[in-house]
Image 1: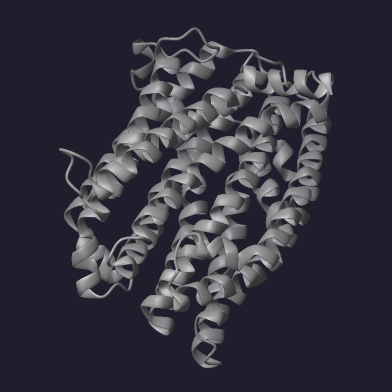
Image 2 (image 1 turned 30 degrees about the horizontal axis):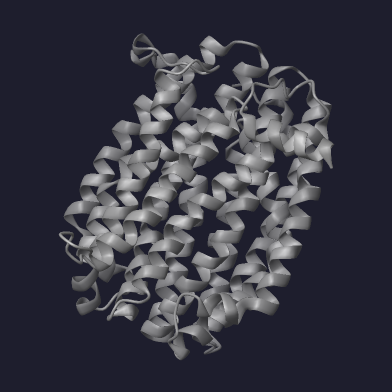
Length: 464
């Protein structure tokens, strides 16, 4: 027992470790434990919002607005994740080469490029918030009700980008503890602020749905301040200095080369989820849409820790390739697959047998609960394959091979999932259930293709 306690203390200590030398099992778990908790906290933002707004008077409109806004923000998440892939790959490779100064310079350049991109998209989201909700399938009255929530959330896109990106930098350096703490701090602030800003207290007015957006934005901003302190001030392996922000066009070119397909990779996936959300809303109506969004938020709560575990593969592949330890890089991936399969099997069983209980925590509307429970049970069928697939995708990304998973996603989501969802829901008249079935079907196919390509080993030849 003492041995396990000491191991956990080391995982949470944030002390610098040479992950190219320690036991592979230890390396995976030392990274995975804080990474899983980090990603669990990312999903808590939406769940906290969903819980509080689900008890508002216009809960149907509110839940739908939160869900649809998160679906649109997933494009912003895609850009942030794509850029963080470049940061993780470059930083991990340089750390593996034992060159922390160049790792810090790479991190600064990624921040520079990302800020320029996100600012423009953030501005567009603020201006066209109501139109975006209507485009997503929301009724005009629901869009009018939720536009301020969407406007604030889209306006905070730069903060969202920084939260993802800086955590990607620290993950690449192997310091997953700082990444985890930043999201814990942000979520504690959000949980504390939500009831005050939504329901009001004393001199604080009840802001309803708008209060949820403000609480989330303030919470994330506090998390980013914590990150910036450790990136710019604290004595860590990655320490960015002001001169590092001077544009280095050779390095920027490398960043764009890695990040562009990485962004497309997640935009492809995110846009497919947007299409599915719109298809559910148009074939099943407001209750189906609210139920589907509730199920998605619950799914992501359990899915993001698995993504966090698979992030360990990304860091270990990058650092071991930097140290020219190719066999160790591959062994690290397969060890991560083993742990992710165990985790996703547990999640599948939870959703199959406790779906109704979990959904009831967020809404008491019978129609919404029925759709949410049905979605959870169907989507959980493919969770084990999804767990394997996300490790494979992260392994490619950690190697800097962001094109392979991009093509896999394009094939799996747009050439298979969307046509299947449309065929089942429209032509076979299955409605939302047809959309739900298309999700595990596509994830299973993507996993099979990704695993075959990983075993072929082309990723081992990538230079960054």
